[in-house]
Length: 82
Ligand code: SF4
Ligand code: SF4
Image (cartoon, rainbow, N blue to C red):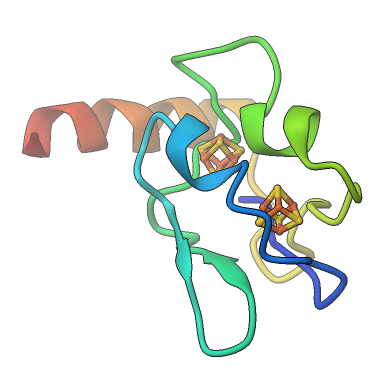
């Protein structure tokens, strides 16, 4: 999963582009739900939020390291729930 750092300026660019509805407005800035973030695996070649963020504040979440295989499994689980 990726994470949004406190450098976020709450511009709202990332929230609508997430294919997994993983992004929402938190207490102080936008946040990513690691249970829903597939790093865009299954949808796009690159993480859309990180691609578009104007202040580049969306790195990989060190607390949630995942392999490509794990991200693909999460993607498959998420589309089944829908
Ligand atoms: Fe959503 Fe993709 Fe960003 Fe994860 S990397 S929060 S899935 S847009
Ligand atoms: Fe924050 Fe970047 Fe998302 Fe804008 S695009 S709300 S600055 S994380």
